Image 1 (cartoon, one colour):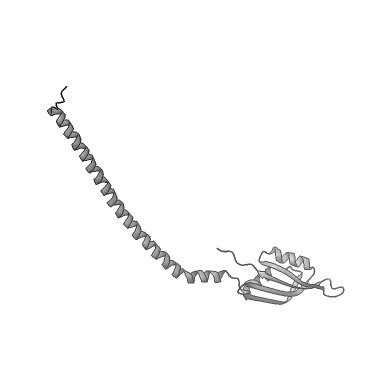
Image 2: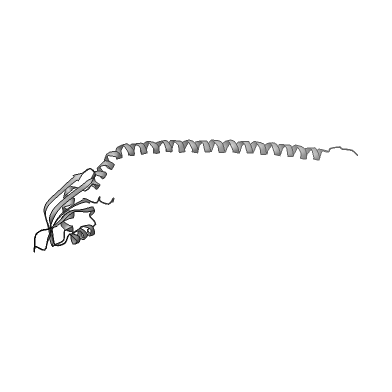
Length: 163
């Protein structure tokens, strides 16, 4: 048995070696090209991320006064308390002393007045939706045969809803 290799077989062997070498060169070139193009995209993304972080920091620092102003605008004023009491007060009741104070914790309301029924007064104030923590401090008869009660109560004005 002879293992003589002819020209044709040699040519095929060298062609196969050349094709394998060419495949390796193409694979390495593609890997290098992908790495450099991804590297460029990655660098662009890093630059954009840095710009976004800078803009976010700028918005946070410049937005603080606006946020504080918004918070102050949401706090009800004493005038809001007066409007709330006036609109919620039943027709058969009247107030002769109102102490309405705007405090950091909200608007505190202390009322003294006369009503035909302290229960209906409390229900009317609670039903308005503008007052909370309504507390009847005192309810006494205004006098024999008067048909009215002298009342003293405390309440807080609800905070405005966030727009």
